[in-house]
Length: 213
Image (cartoon, one colour):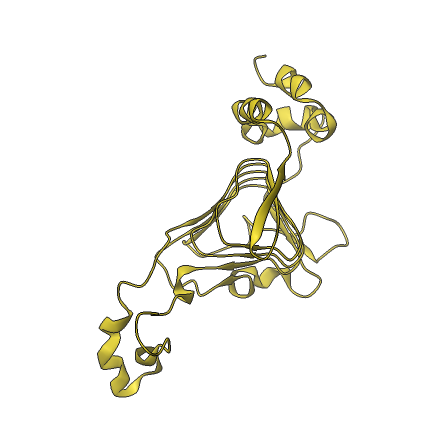
């Protein structure tokens, strides 16, 4: 009987320490990652929480779905990166200590766009940057070097700085069908039996392969 890949192994690719599965790696309660989502970095992929998730002082979360592929240098900027912009200076004086800390109230009420949420089966190209509070739909593709400042629709392909929608991978009707099938929620054994259809089949074939179809 075919055996699914193990989602608990930190380095899933033998001989390739540059690739890590994120679910068994992350420890922060503010980061949630689904099974099989991975990060690839020739330097130190195990430092993902500190090098790739920046200004994460809380309380907002970074949520990444299952089966996402994150290329080298993907960066998630969190809400802690925000500064005041309604006065002459944007410098965060109270964070520097001393008597400046008496003015910490000046840092309350900064813009907060909430959680950053990534759907399932999203591919991030090399060196992409995701701004706070962005929501990226299922099956999306983020082009290399993109700076994503706004939400990305399901199965959308975006690129540029700021990233704009280049096209969608499927028409509206087929996107709805793909979301209904939600292959990423299938049992691992069922996914294993239908890997070829998931990777290269048509929407019709994927629907036919769904559990209970």
